[in-house]
Amino acid sequence: MTLPDDLSASIARMDQDDLSALADILPGALWRAPAGTERHAWADSLMAQVIAAQEANERASGV
Image 1 (cartoon, rainbow, N blue to C red):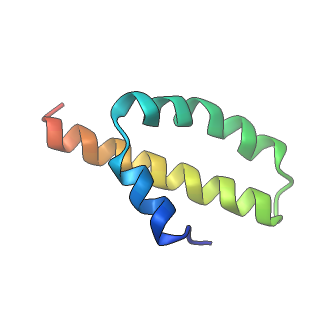
Image 2: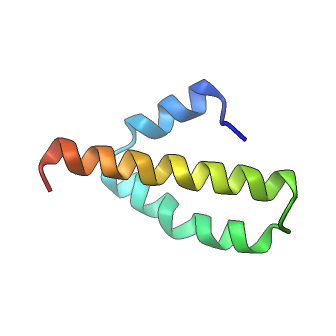
């Protein structure tokens, strides 16, 4: 599942604090969503986007 472009763009613009907050919340959302459901697919896709944005921020800041 892919996220809407505007949501992906918003995630890409988030600062590290906001991304960290999302990264703390999303595993719980993923675990509570039954496997194979649309909700699980959304949580999984959202988590992947957050991780990618965190990695991009780290590369940009030289961490």
